[in-house]
Image 1 (cartoon, one colour):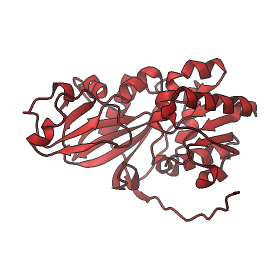
Image 2: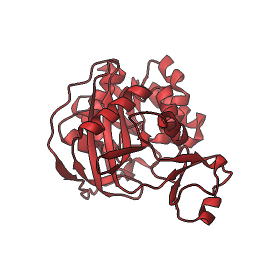
Image 3: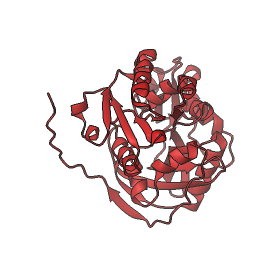
Image 4: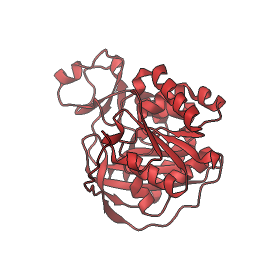
Length: 318
């Protein structure tokens, strides 16, 4: 099946296991890449072929390595799983497309909104339905901004570089910088939403309250739930920024209030939770970006789900 040869990047990332398993079950030929040696990841045993590649921050050198793999393996599609790889691959999107390779990411417009935290906040700041925290660019920061506050790199990834600001002295450290957004600190619970949409506007979402999460923001124990108000907000956001395929949105949930704090234009670390309740986000992502109609959403009950990691002993071929 020539068209089912797909390349998955960052196979050591949280979402990789679910993505690879789903594609393999659907008879895709899966080639994986990662910056670490093949034998360091269990996920390498799930792939048909695995290559070690350079960091995506190498830019053109990284892209050239992918292009060589694509030619050698007759790859027809690529799914990048981390933000930095999405950013770099998107810069060379036309190069891949000229080779007949489908880039399974959001459009350049959608990425430009989602990957810029200041632009995202500004985009929805006057929206009647979507609430965002009070915010200011660090370049325009004044010492009377509301405290406590949160400083985030404008193009930050996976909770990297986030600083909680408690005092005017701490606030002054960020004054004049041009690469941070300063937001008011809001009390509440983190709620993330796996959301999928196709070109016809059909969509589906799986919200989860994160009860336990890692330091870089990956939920390990979650409460799956549904909420009509949140559903309207998420669908409105998806239409406004032109989502096609699967993304993840993050909100602060306080009683029946939902405040948008981030959009991750990729599979979330908890994508397996959504697949577990009965909706295949991975295959429908592929279907949507190929111009197809996604499957109708499924009903699900409120439930608590936990990730469990078991030890796997591998014997590398040294």
